[in-house]
Length: 202
Image 1 (tube, rainbow, N blue to C red):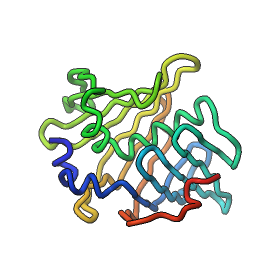
Image 2 (spheres, rainbow, N blue to C red; image 1 turned 90 degrees about the vertical axis):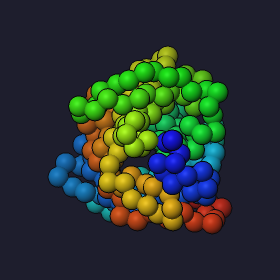
Image 3 (cartoon, rainbow, N blue to C red; image 1 turned 90 degrees about the horizontal axis):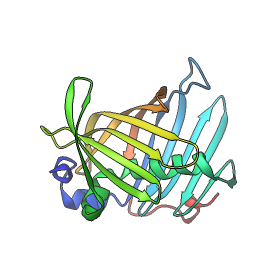
């Protein structure tokens, strides 16, 4: 039902590659709105470029390896990229990994009762999708790392629009360890046939 809510199996399958542009806010840049460009490829490849005041931070994930500012990423920085890649492809992951799903029952989010499904992306890294039973859409995700330094990232989703048959949330609210970190508003989403080879290199 969730896959159907995002355009159906064919649309979800076509979204193996995605490129997005938009604006972003951050606690590190109060009162400003920066630019964000994201590229994603299955399985688990991600590039994020965030620009404030002409300075661009680049984060890259290529499977098990990650980089931030061109340097190898570890710990919470690597986990955050793993979880972000998973969030971008949640409908496909729910469809592809039914054997990994754990039913966490119902949770209440902003007065709505949602159905929580959880999966482990890699050992100790867990992503929960909170689905609206009425629409099948994911209205919130919760990602966390178990063991070591506790990390939890929460994202809410809204402003759903169709792009080449795929339904995409154009608005995201973001929290880390219970504190708001800003919002992402997409202005352009593409489902390309290919991405440049250098996309997922530091």
